[in-house]
Amino acid sequence: MKTLGLIGGTSWHSTIEYYSAINQSVNDYFGNNTNPPLLVYTLNQAEVHRFQIENKWDSIAHMLTQGAKSLRKAGAEAVMFCANTPHKVYNQVQEQLDFKVIHIADVTAQAIQKKGIKKVCFIGTKYSMQETFISQRLQENGLDVLVPESESVINELHRIIIEELTYGKIKEESKAYVISILNGLINKGAEGVILGCTEFPLMIFKDDLSVPIFDTTKIHAMSGVEYILGE
Image (cartoon, rainbow, N blue to C red):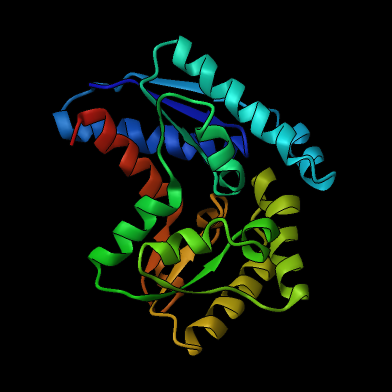
């Protein structure tokens, strides 16, 4: 098995989901308690959020680069950012490394295409909805992507992530709000929904919507399993 490094902490709740999913899938593959060679580097989420607010993305890129290099020194052969938003600086980090960072949007697009779906909607943090570092990557992979257009909607979805989900809080009124926004995008033609923040799958489940849900956390984690197993 190949050694994979996970850069987590944004948030640690979703990092646990990655760690759990990868270990369980490798257990299932071997049919016993065989565990994969995983290495975890945890970022300080409070510091990351501060840099985001201050628009210091170069500092976030530096944190991710140092994390990746530390994992490399420890034996990782490839790494993953265990969240969508850090991919804003993916290119900046990848060019500093001589090993692979597995991109969340690339593997998500592949999973969607396997279902024969072409038009999807995407929700995530305000950074990933207002900017194109995820949606453009998805489009480059052949998908038509809808995102919320209203600034108030974008801000409220972001607030739910930052103030509630990253603390593990699930509020019914917030869940109802998110579902209403997603149903509006489905009515505009979305054939599938991308939960593009690793916290949203803690709240939204397949029975909540009339179209398939693509959980970037699960998809990304499974791509890590494929890498580990050399498939």
